[in-house]
Length: 169
Ligand SMILES: [Zn+2]
Image (cartoon, rainbow, N blue to C red; front, side, top):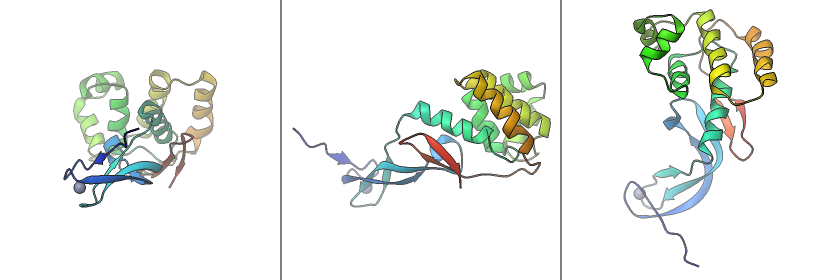
C-alpha cells in the first residue's frame, strides 16, 4: 500500500498528521475550538491545516451552541445564523421586518440587537434551519430562552467532533 504523503499548503514541504485542537475561524464564529481533530502540520514552516470532520454535522452543533447560549447574540453570530439560513441581508431584513441598515448595524456590532429580535432569530433557526425533532426544539424555547441574559456577550464553544457534543468555554 502506498503511504499517503501530506504536503503543506503554505510551503509545499513535507507535513505530518498529528492530533490537536484547532480554532475554527473559517466557520464565521470567532470562538469555536475543535478538539482532538487531525491536523496536517508542516515540518518546515509549522503551518497547520485542519482535517475538518463531518462539516454538516459540525455546522448543526455550532448553530445549536449559538442559539442555546445564555447571552444575547453578537454581530458575527447574527451573520453566522443568517448565512446558515442561506439568506442575503435583504431577504433576512425583509423577513425580520427591519431595514437593511439595522441588520448591518447588528452584524457589525454598531448597535446591540434587541431582546425580542434576538429570540425571534433563534426561533427562526429552530423552525427553518435545524433538522431535529419538534420536541427538542420546543425544549430549547422553554428551557433556554428564559435564562438568556440581557447582556451582549461572546461565548467560546468547544466541540468534540468524535461525538458531536459541545460545551461553553
Ligand atoms: Zn510549510
